[in-house]
Image (cartoon, rainbow, N blue to C red; front, side, top):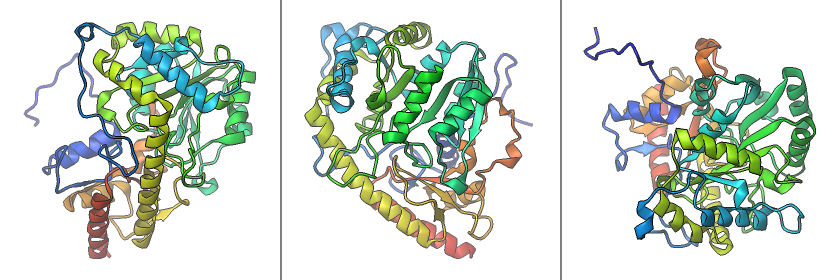
Length: 420
């Protein structure tokens, strides 16, 4: 019998994959800042100095008026800076340009996504499998829309074409599609002509694309030294008419997750709706941090930070893949984006060949990973949880620093050797 009281008025709210993994590790002594643990489950990049990157912000001044609430949609100056950055990166020479009215600032990525979900009507919303674990509760808590899963096949490299998108929209009556690009956890990227065709299909069929672009500066397919950032903003024709919503922020691409500064870029009428939703959901983000964020959106800073990230994280990606493949973990090629590697562990000896089995065993070595079944997004648990297609997969984060990764590889090698 449990010693904990139960309360009739409250339901049990499940933890997302990363939070579950770290909570289980905490039972064994893990805590944020632990120096004896290797957290390959973390959803944040390393936040310290990187070679070639701009100096990290170490203090933030607070003005007298910063003691007041920020506008729910964000400081106007910050919204202008975000719009300007998108226009410079993706819309040079195009007649339709983003303005501050196309930007809604939020206090974190989940807040921006929650505002969007709360603003949807009675529609069918498509989402992909696998995808970001936090989508599961997000897609279940709001009852106005119906979430429709779209399966991606490992055998085809999790590819999905514009023709596939058209077929899903027409066949399932979708009015919106939510997805991460680059994809968390697979690292798959839709870019270039392929992404242009996705936007074209959405425009033609009036299907809103809700695109989580939080890893859009972690793209490894372009030559080293270039600025291989990508966004659907590049392919929007009319910023106030095309049904495209873009979510991004300082969390990953600027490596300031603790700032909780994120935004949605969208047509002006949708931004007004998102701000209305924010007025009752969260009330808006931190005013002093929003003000401090403005200089970090200058193009010189964005370019320098992105190039540094590309170099360091590309090296970590390559090292992660080579070391884990040597241990018998299979990958569908190297991830094209993000700082995650989506590994198939089915060839390892039991119990290491299941996500939960590997996860539990790795905890004994003070290594944290995230079982693949958490990315089998299942709002409301309408599908049986006993038959996840991803029970033999793990997400390995190469967000930590290289020394932590190397220690983790040594521990996993010892662990797998003991089980063989």
